Length: 261
Image (cartoon, rainbow, N blue to C red; front, side, top):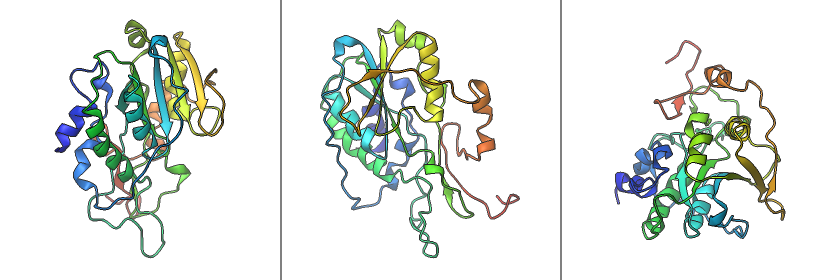
């Protein structure tokens, strides 16, 4: 399959939620190097809400984990919606700096790309209805783990915005009564995602969370009001130094100096 076909499998015209699927990574499927190590997701999914509960899922898991979980959730009737908006390191560039030993890219999205490509084969065989509840999938490592970027490194750290998700009104109008937020560790969502969940919460969407590093079951929770809540957070994007390559994608080389290109 070519990259357009792969994207259409993940974001088919027959899905209510495809308008939110990010095309950024799919445009770079040709960047996948050969012989990438295989990844797997063996976590038990018995916590998955029954379809009758009318819940949406938000999976904020590291690397390709959310993709792999999303494919498995599709077999349970959920529509995985990829929200990855970081560009991969340009094809042919060294992955590791030979002098510093540091990864050249802030975030390694190549395993995610490979998982999306392989996952398309499985998704293609699953006939999901138009209104199958969504499972939004993100990379928990998108912020680069607080890495300080150096000159000549590829800065593809990214964040998500409230506009990357459907509004609470849209969710409710399409039968979604609650949201289950899933992460591997931690009690509160990352700051960017907190803005999304907080808005849903304020609009009356019932929120639950689940940590995969414990045996706890989904439990209701309240999202703390994030700092710079609202539009100020989006305006602060460039103050944090994030580099946008396109209207939807993040990724650019760090110049040698503030005056560099």
